[in-house]
Length: 171
Image 1: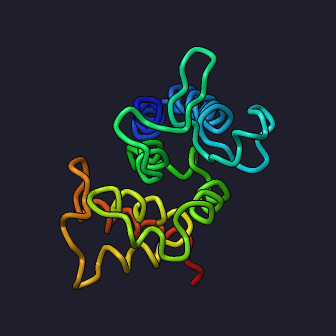
Image 2: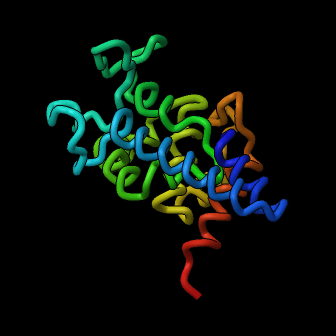
């Protein structure tokens, strides 16, 4: 978030050098995340045996362990790498990556079976590839507030999905 903030501050203050530095730092961080933590099928950095996991899980020293310290549920392992959901998230978690991850772990109703706040995290992330579907999920009259994680609000998820609808819809 700090690099995104530097870029925005440069843009709103008219300091194009600061905005360019922020963009450069954000691009470096996004590329590193995509190479070392988030694995699209075209990843050439990680061993091919890891790429199918889509996310590192725990990465320390010279070991990658597709798990978390707090549980082995796939929504925990993948979901922790979805946080925080911010305006620039699709720059790091590209639509191609999110679609591959969704198809691998959460499509065909599997996300619907997730309980608690992890469900909101998954559908917030889903807005990157299907903002209309995510908006429908969060605006449903049957929406359960228990599907929100403690760091998010329904308003945030609705605005995030609606923003993606506005950006990616064709007139």
